[in-house]
Length: 157
Image (cartoon, rainbow, N blue to C red; front, side, top):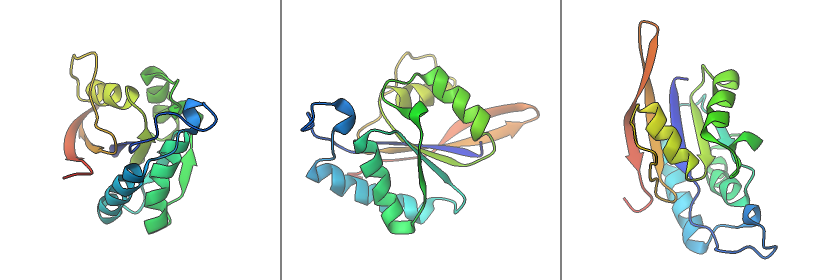
């Protein structure tokens, strides 16, 4: 992967009308934050970026803010669901998207754990604020690939 960009869904309601976690919608603030981050992403993303999204409503609404600005197609992937694991996400990304710049719209704790793992840190958790973007860039040295933090952007910054 050239770059991996992680976008945690924006603020969502505590409980959905259906009572299902996957049906939780963005709050008014969440929609505002998603639009703000989508504007920034639209100005900085490479044109060939693949946008992947969790099937959860709050993630799809967050990704829709970007699609509304630049008509980027959003692919909903079950492997990014709230119940997925870092290992499963990493395996799917490596098998399907290994040479692409990928924007992932997803959930904690998996986003934080993926970032920690890719940066070679030894923490057991990584905190990513709601609505924020972590952009990791890949560096190739010989046969080894490492990642470094290219940018971190939060809705309120």
